[in-house]
Image 1 (tube, rainbow, N blue to C red):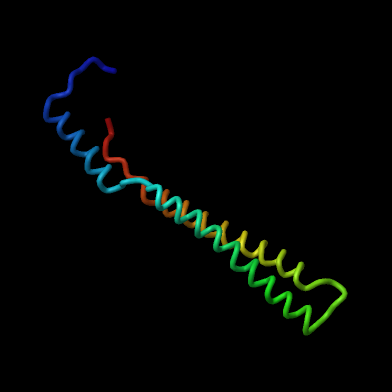
Image 2 (cartoon, helix red, strand yellow; image 1 turned 60 degrees about the vertical axis):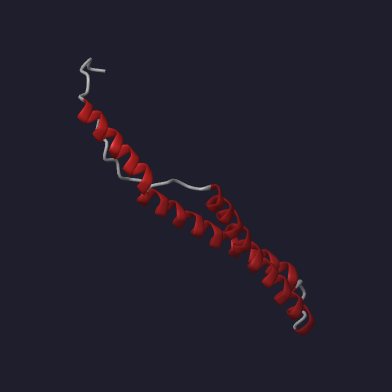
Length: 106
């Protein structure tokens, strides 16, 4: 604190900038978080279930010494994990790009 009092015009200007910044960047809503949770779940579940069905089909039509179903379920989990990781990192980059402006230098 410098001990200097701001003029009413400076106070009004600072408050206006703060309100504009809050209006332009409303932040993350709880529904967006719920949507992200669902997107991550689906990105893991779909490849896993797809791998299970493909593995069961391959076990019936192309039997091997190892079970195709287990191998493709594990492959689906790994693939889904990579998809979810890529989606989360992309969302994190989008959030950091949007929230970087700071007009209030006081």
